[in-house]
Length: 209
Image 1 (tube, rainbow, N blue to C red):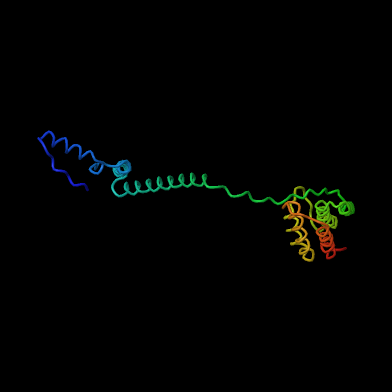
Image 2 (image 1 turned 60 degrees about the vertical axis):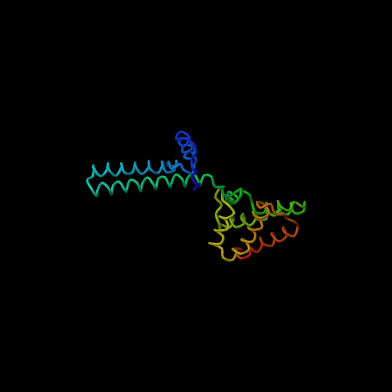
């Protein structure tokens, strides 16, 4: 704290000196805005306790007042949490499993011919997809799995794993290759397509009729 200077001159000069010193923020003891807000909240709580105390009678009224205050605090915390949550960066959208658009009337022989034609033309991505769809079409034609509209690659894989133990491992690898190349922007080449063709045979051999 500053040391008060000794006033010089007459009484009027001394009074002015004192008033000048007391205007310094260091000597301002008035409540801050935060303190005034907290005092106002405290007064409202006291009014609330008094209201419930008079209405409910003694301890019961005070208990009701406490419960109301707790409810208000919880509501305020929930609102603050909502505001903070809305301002947080949103996570990246979860990838959706690709839907396999397999025509129920498309024959496996047609898909095999399509895959071989695309392979000969060097259309590696399209050829890999045709081999993947060929594996599904063969399993559907043999009544080993179902083919409802809008089915995803993950749903086909889940059913194969549940019903066809021998075909599950190669079909899982084939599905992974298809999804990586077709939906994951992965590259494909002749070796990749040849591996897919081999996987189709490995899927179908254990379930051959």
